[in-house]
Length: 154
View 1: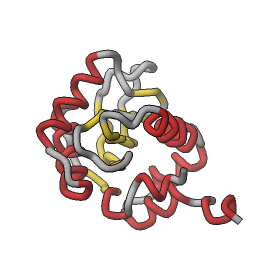
View 2: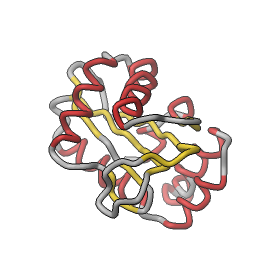
View 3: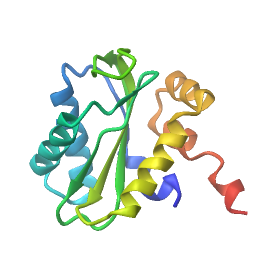
């Protein structure tokens, strides 16, 4: 599994100001729904339901919200770089500015867990996160997220 198979360049955005976690979930769901053809309202509800189990802010300014969605064909992602960090209730109590949301088919099972592990490993790379924070071009952000995949495949 490659990150480039999870998130298309069109799913990478720089977002100005988000006022709340709920608004962030709505924005993530709208982008995902438009690209991956699922119901935005269902996705928002699923993201909030998952967040109710415990915050998906993993620390160091990173959040990995995820949800299972009926009718989705494959695990898909949306990445937002927030220009203004958002209080997310993260484990380290730091606001979040890098958000990688995953939407998985309801019955994805292991595929969902593998995708979540891949995204988690990618976002734990401090150098990569520094590059993400230093860029505002969505094309560059997608390239940074997926860098190194071609060399690993060879």
